[in-house]
Image 1 (cartoon, rainbow, N blue to C red):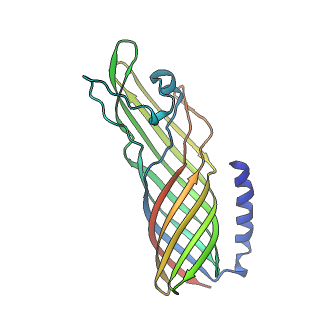
Image 2 (image 1 turned 120 degrees about the horizontal axis):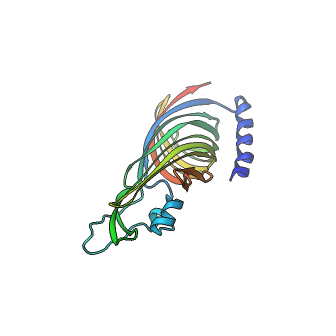
Image 3 (image 1 turned 45 degrees about the horizontal axis):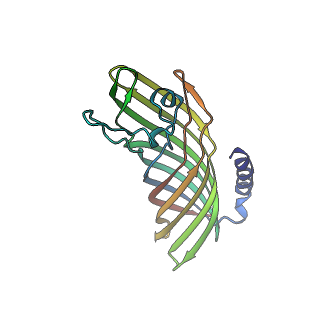
Length: 239
């Protein structure tokens, strides 16, 4: 992943530095959206060793008659951000700042036997991160006021993941902070509502995770892999 980023980012940066020759407009966007799920499996060494959970949230759910449990679903997330885009007739390059935070899911009750019989375990997973994308791609214009765009690139992403497990006999918490250089792909469309403003929507896919991080005698990674849906407004400034 890092090798691919080292190849992609210098190419995009070089073209951005010499973009004046093709650029016809610059646009600033404000956007909001959501991601159906973030965080990957939330695997950690403590879960593996103490709960017998080998794939994190994917196999942590357990139930038994007489013990109240609830399904622990993968966290959904909300996102917001602002980006700047330099565009030509058919090519664009873009960067900005985006913030993503889990807001639903990631918590519930499972069960485990710590040595004195099965007991309910309250589980909480949460994650926030920001990322700075650097992407480039093609623009297809049609019907004068409509455009489609597709781009690829990479990002610098930094975030914090928090895990919590609590039962009658055991309590464990760990927080993992770290970064990664995920790869990205995006596809979207926009509609001009005036000479200097358009509405847009985008589907974005990001793939990458941090190195292993240690906290409170536990080890885990931050998985930034996700896909998201967003919409917003673009404000154009012609050269």
